[in-house]
Amino acid sequence: MKIAVIGGGGREHAIIKSLKKSPEVESIYALPGNGGIAEDAECIPIGALDLDEIVKFANDEALDYVVVAPDDPLVMGLVDRLAEAGIPAFGPTAAAAQIEGSKAFAKDLMKKYGIPTAEYEIFKDVRKAAAYVEDCKLPVVIKADGLALGKGVIIAKTREEAREGIATIMEEKKFGSSGDTVVIEEFLEGPEVSVLAFTDGKTMRPMVSSMDHKRALDGDEGLNTGGMGTVAPNPYYTKEIADECMKRIFLPTMHAMNEEGRTFRGCLYFGLMLTKDGPKVIEYNSRFGDPETQVVLPLLDGDLFEIMRATTEGRLDEVDFSFREESACCVVAASDGYPVSYRKGFKVTLPKEHDQIFIAGTKLGEKDGEICQLTSGGRVLGVTETAATLPEAIEKAYAKLAEVHFENMYYRKDIGKRALEALSE
Image (cartoon, rainbow, N blue to C red; front, top):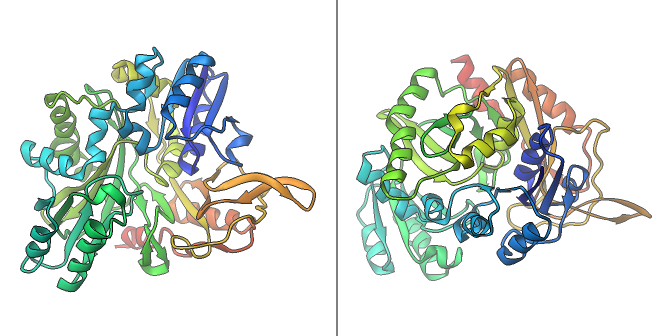
């Protein structure tokens, strides 16, 4: 079959490498892809937000299937557009993708159906939002309602920080129209867990859990990023907690979306906080997480294409797959200065064996008379390794990372440290 994967980051590279293993997949296009993805798929210079051109390309090439990986085209309705053209796709409809596209919608959904989450208020008026934080409990979490590249969240520890956060989102429009509405919610404490799940609206199949590392610097210091690394499984996520999440969060969310006439088919991401009062939802995403995908899919024991197609066709219960009882670690190599400002255009040197190095931000170019990969983004690549135990996977990932070179390279030295501490408790 001829398929296409929409997007051009490390998540998409991991998806493509996994799809390549399927005997049914004959060729893969990446729209737009990147310099590293070009080793595994034919990259087409069509942006992920150019819905008209994507649909035209899918028609012209008579594609059999499309995987829509990023959030924006899902919320914009790319899956709907492809369906209208007779092309099946993996991912939710625009109506279902609202579970990520609007935090206000997601919070109201959870409240309506009794799904555990933080207490919250929604504001469209900046003056009312500012008045609310003058006497609310601190710390407080302020979120832009819409998509903001995973960065539209401010944790305010003081009244002044809360005022500044509201001004930044609602008046200065740092996140554009995503900040027209804000959700202000209570600050939850406890270990964070990411759980991705396949669902077709009838069946819910969670994947292996993971632990993301969002802060730019060691010790969970510095600015929030798109993710500096991740490990799987998350040691805090026990079987007992998994059972509770399935009963109180995962299945109720699936049923709630059905009740709302927004049946979700695709990958539903649950961002969870394990509080003293039990697991609660911090956020939903309507697609694979990045970089969680880079540790989850390497542990998959099954045919990803078969799983995706069954999800689209509403027969997920017919597919047999599991996740190996091993561990995985992904360490992200970024350009120094990320996530604020950084230089680009440096040559990337990879080790000979790099099957589990997922490229996020490179382009093909010429350096010293040689066609090679050049850095073109903040997060450049992620090095993933799997092993029988988490300490082994972490050690292997850092050893492999030592064989990667590009000028201005920066990475955290403590990916997995919190997980190892949890294992030793």
